[in-house]
Image (cartoon, rainbow over all chains, first blue to last red):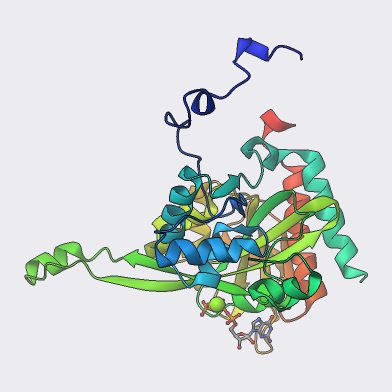
Length: 120
Length: 208
Ligand SMILES: Nc1nc2c(ncn2[C@@H]2O[C@H](COP(=O)(O)OP(=O)(O)OP(=O)(O)O)[C@@H](O)[C@H]2O)c(=O)[nH]1
Ligand SMILES: [Mg+2]
């Protein structure tokens, strides 16, 4: 195995300490993509937590999509998702790395994709 | 328990196509903004691949002082519906469109929705150009790159030249200005393309 840049340990801190020490909370935004981790849902979830988990069994959702489907404010879904992430029941990823917003290649692909739509 | 058969997926809550396709990789967003009744929801609906959805957002009214004077303790909150739609493009890109009201009083919400956006498409109704001043101010303060699309309402005045419209809105010479029929998908796509082309041509210098 090749050593990590900057000599970071291969095992994330939260795993090496048995899951107690958490990395700082995942930054969640409106377009963060939520997926279920596949871990069995424990007893004792709130109805809203269970409802979000159930939606994620059908596939990935962004935070706003989950809010629309569950008819909850975005702020409530952000809290629900953060709790479920802390319990390893939900995974989240960023929509795009922020710097990529100005990536000419990405923008050109958006333009090409929109042009393609017109010929459908 | 969920079985992974396609029939389950089709009939499940996700069967309305709202769950993301497995191919979704890069999620980007554009704000579709403009004054009340200008055609934001119409434009999003004309191009979205999912039935347009909305979230209910709470607004804390800036009327706290008035409330205090009146002896009212509770801050009054109102909700506003924010529509959004989605377009899956080739190469795993998913473009989200957020119908964002352009009034100054929505600013905290505006800042939140604008976070990470590529830019804004500002819809303008030529019958009431003044109604767009607020939103143009907001967009410019946020620093979002934008394009202007005049929505083609049948009774819109037609005697204005593009130069007059540009002057009335005080637009930079480089800001794209197009006309658009928000009910027509191709016309809406053209307006979005004008914005995206502008983003490509006028990236911040450090990203060129
Ligand atoms: N002729 C014409 N009518 C349009 C066009 N775009 C929107 N409309 C009509 O204008 C009305 C208002 O459009 P909406 O899409 O609801 O406007 P909005 O900006 O979402 O309005 P609010 O959310 O209330 O601020 C609807 O009756 C539309 O059918 C257009 O390009 N041409
Ligand atoms: Mg609307």
